[in-house]
Amino acid sequence: DIQMTQSPSSLSASVGDRVTITCRASQSISDYLNWYQQKPGKAPNLLIYAASSLQSGVPSRFSGSGSGTDFTLTISALQPEDFATYYCQQGYTTLLTFGPGTKLDI
Amino acid sequence: QVTLKESGPALVKPTQTLTLTCTFSGFSLSTNGMRLSWIRQPPGRALEWLARIDWDDEKFYSTSLKTRLTVSKDTSENRVVLTMTNVDPVDTATYYCARSYCNSGRCSVPFDHWGQGTLVTVSS
Image (cartoon, rainbow over all chains, first blue to last red):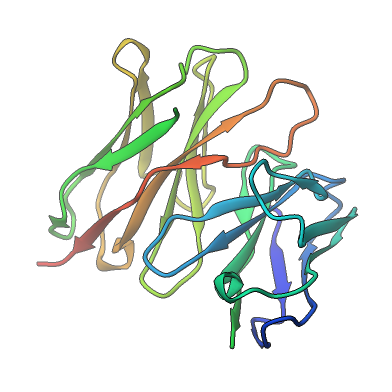
């Protein structure tokens, strides 16, 4: 199975900050990488698919990049509603896997 | 409007079989490229993908759980069922069903719609 790692595991930031979260795959996954945001007690919400495509309805301050094994999620200017946990997920193989998550708090 | 909702027991005893149902609307699982997965999340922990069933009835299972999982679909009733045998307290989690739709060969299988989740506690 492809293993996904994320760094950092937690991150403290302030409103207005630019934040970058990194996701790494244990082998090349091309651009078959998705990003989700999850708030406490809620289901995850798709932000970015295919590494860099913004899901409909998601604010443009979210962006994704990368290919192969290394990927990043960037939030250009943090808003209060962005404090949440972020997960990456690979869809390269039929056995799908998520990263361990990055908790972003104030 | 796409909706999904999980249902099943809130409490099961160790060694029992857990049966969860995902009832959905707004799409058909017989549409080419449609897929439905089960994902779980133990309290305070990360997401874990469990199983997937596709429009063509292909099924895929997590390597670590494949001997205990079975997924099936009832296309006419818009339902997908997951069974997990021989449950253990470590299976305590919120269980989600989530949809993916891939209309081309290149697809990262994103989960674009999720159910609200159902919390299952395994305890005697």
